[in-house]
Image (cartoon, rainbow, N blue to C red; front, side, top):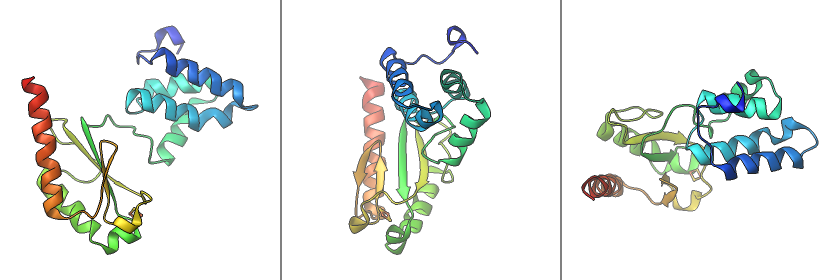
Length: 171
Ligand code: FES
């Protein structure tokens, strides 16, 4: 696919950042993961057209890019909901009841981990250690850490998201 046919609109600064990465590394392959991060930061996820674009930009086989994005869970190959809930279920969080909270969230949202609610509002992801084991269990909600989680705090988070969405719909 040529750049002209690229259907996903990247910001000019993203394209520039990817060009800079290509110039910085002696081998294009080394720029692959940082380039994918730039693109995902821009789009919020990694649609197939974006992966094709990165592959073509770096002169790599598309299958190589697809392999990397499917191996690393930080790359979102499905369009996320408006809000992303990333709950850690690694050891420290697990010992503090993270699985119970994950199940609680699944029940409240009516989805499984890795899915998005039918209205496209919320995506729930189960993730590896978030580097905040001392305040387990931990969840990131739209890039903001929530620590020492309890079902009550989860309820408050969900109500807050609802209010925010209602506010943006009203306003
Ligand atoms: S194990 Fe959950 S933040 Fe480290």
